[in-house]
Length: 455
Figure 1 (tube, rainbow, N blue to C red):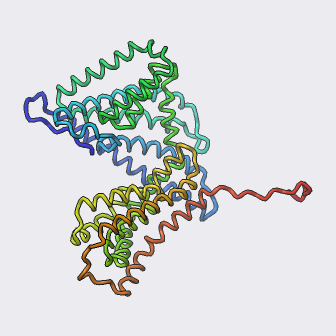
Figure 2 (figure 1 turned 45 degrees about the vertical axis):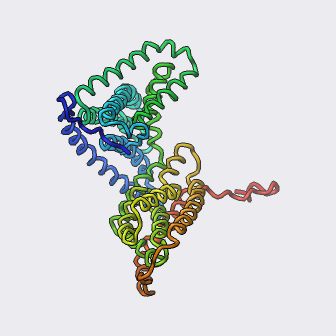
Figure 3 (figure 1 turned 120 degrees about the horizontal axis):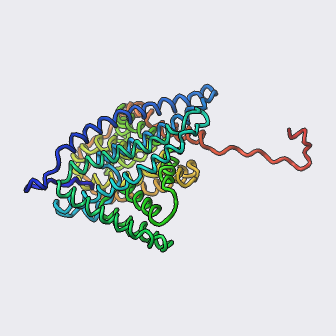
């Protein structure tokens, strides 16, 4: 749904500035390599820590703390990469049908709002860093500045990335005019700050309804829209120190449970590269592919099983679609039906553990991840059954003549090849339950039990 503004064909004033493209490519290369190395380091640290804890029964106490610090850096570098690729979540419903000229102006205005948030965040991030220079971590006993500096460095690099994106996609006129409009709006809000201070809770409507909705409606990435609204609310209508914003950002990214997210994404990419997903799909196709709508059922079942391995919908779809779509098209399936079924199955499997969404919800709300994983299975089963009913209705008259049923030997051979992929979801869920299950309560002692016997 995200579309870059198309360059206009007329005057030089509407020609995007070329310097932005060179700087953008340079920054992308400078950020992507450290991010990849941090992912690899987190995998090795957490994998080694898990092996030492559960295999050797000799936990290494500093692994989780070091991995948490690295994850804060990974999150900030990932935000920079997402901004460079225009991959941040945003709403384009209201702007996707605008003309290219109007869309270019709206995109320039939205990018200026992103830059304003990052610029205003820079000083609070610096204050947050200086406050943690003399604070040491409990296990590694290194300065907390190693963790706090990630927010400042990430903010500065995102600001530079946003500026290069603005120069690359917008003309000189769009950059200048939209910048002046944003500056004028900021000046008006600053002048109205005494009035806003006196409004009290009415500021929640102004900043978290009007400003937030406006930013989201014009395509500002949702994370930056919330950040800008929050920062303006705190700065213009309260006396709260702004350093609380980078502090809360750091705390949100330091949650231990979130360390599972890059590991599950890596696992999803791994099963795609090693062919485990294709082997499982081949087995399911041999099992029921000869039936009416068989490959559609295979797609649904494969998405359900693969989602229980990776937790990344992008990896799931990349593993399932190329293996099934060519044969499904040969059987007469339409592109729109295939894309709709794949998208619906991806939404259906969003709550199947290990689910990145459920991990994030649990880390934010404090709800038990194990309880969320157990509860997430049933909605996915209901969605799977309902979509299977739709597939049956659509393919009940499908012509299956000339399609031979695989032999038992072929079916058994494909089962043996697919066994590792089929066993992975069981292994992952079992390991997660053992790692996160609540401690077993001891039986209460009777009141007549002597103290020495209780000991």
